Length: 354
Image (cartoon, rainbow, N blue to C red; front, side):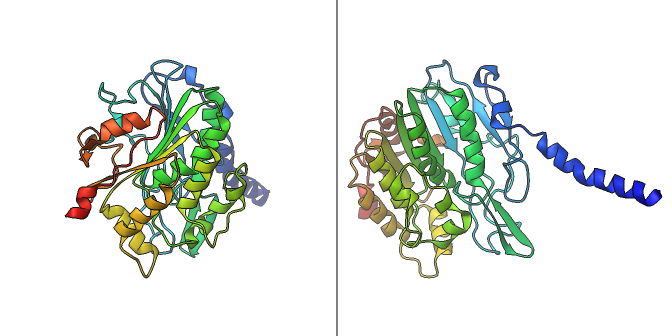
């Protein structure tokens, strides 16, 4: 009898975490936009969402000034990993989402008069999966290192809430910084397909995608299973020839009336370091970056802004309001881009003259 009771108790305790996990909400169970408080609100993840090492996921929403305000979907940055060394506990990636994610954010997250997004709805998509929002895969790099590359899964959960709560927004900015820049181009076609009547601007902040052609980690993370199925050229893409430029080019071709754009500093140290880790025979990153932009510049609905220096990202920094390149203030260029019309490229010509 004691053995039976002991076994029953063990089974009960073993099942308790699963029961608690099953109690987590689906996107349909979360508070609606109308039920949120002014300022930032924290919304829980579900049983399907997870950070790289098993921690719970959550996301953040800040209601705009009116129902007609622009919808801003921002993908957070935070590094990446693709081997046992980089994916170890002290690797160059964020593995958790905390309540204080936004505490140090400035730039577009300072809601002041100079901010062109001051009145808008903000959906902040946190990042904790080391896969630049492309993944839906669990990968074991070694017996001691297993990573939940579920960035696409987590962001799709957030998008389900967005779709449920924004019936027909007139204007959308889909953007992100660093790793989040890849989330922005990954999910831009999904938002454009969901809202065909909206004016959508995609803006990648410091995520040019300088990696080898057919870069293997993208397949490890699961990007090819997550391509938009409604764009045939992407749904049937060849992993051997894929680069992030393909995602830009095919998305821009599929939605010629929408605008796509990127920003980078000319000698971005973070992007350079990740590129050097990605290949045993790296070329000059700045040369590769300019080549990427030259390829995309053939698209009528793609624009870029290259700034001087080695800094990384602009949107969450107050440099947003002070940066200038080629005599063009970034805040003016960015505000013009938000109007949904093509803007002139800013190439940082003075950088080449140095």
